[in-house]
Image (cartoon, rainbow, N blue to C red; front, side, top):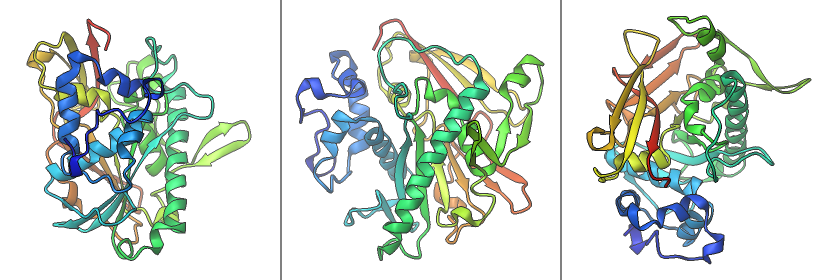
Length: 342
């Protein structure tokens, strides 16, 4: 049961119109996963009376919105659902607005959720280049929407505006970690291929000003390195808040799955690898969540809004130096190998 009696799993459309991600949830063996989503929806207000239908037919953006609602509630933030937009108005103890969006596939691109087993990327640098372009596209679209509409709303004016972004731009999008958002916002490029090829103990990183879209066409990055996006106070980001998060939080100790996770270390630039069966695995709702602050923001977002042991917070100073606050063992990425395909 969700807010205002919202039942996520009462079908609103014909079965043939259901999104593959939602259709998977109807498996009788996934009651624990459905319970997680129902818990995320508790207190959520379906303001335009079409959220459930959208969840069932388009799925991904609605899943992200439910997750963000659960995050804000877990942090003790009070939400006001009296306005049609943006997606969230937080009034207490903090005061800010937040819009949810996803990085979607390019026209004709493979969907994040489909059939079959996706192939591991052959070139991680190319994988990250494409992901960065999709992230930039999502950000520019919402920035345009803010300037043309949200900024005219009285409840948005003079409040920090946060953009919440998650990647659903390709199969295996959860492998993106924070590479695309770091490039898009802070102009930081990690050379994954050379780092692995040379067996480096530290990752190779360089500053970039643009990413090639096609020969002769570059897309500017480093959007938080100047005042070009001053309307966006911060970006909340996670590549691990999708189906894997639902499975990880589900109370299903009998689930025949192996969890392989990478965790950031404060002692080394190389991640720690952990493996555990479902019955021995635990994860927090906020694990893997990033908050990236804009030093040029017109209305800065206070760091304590998303302060939590599971959250990583980044801020690039005007001189280009990056400051990161995170605890040992921060969740970078997660892979789940299940015996039964679900």
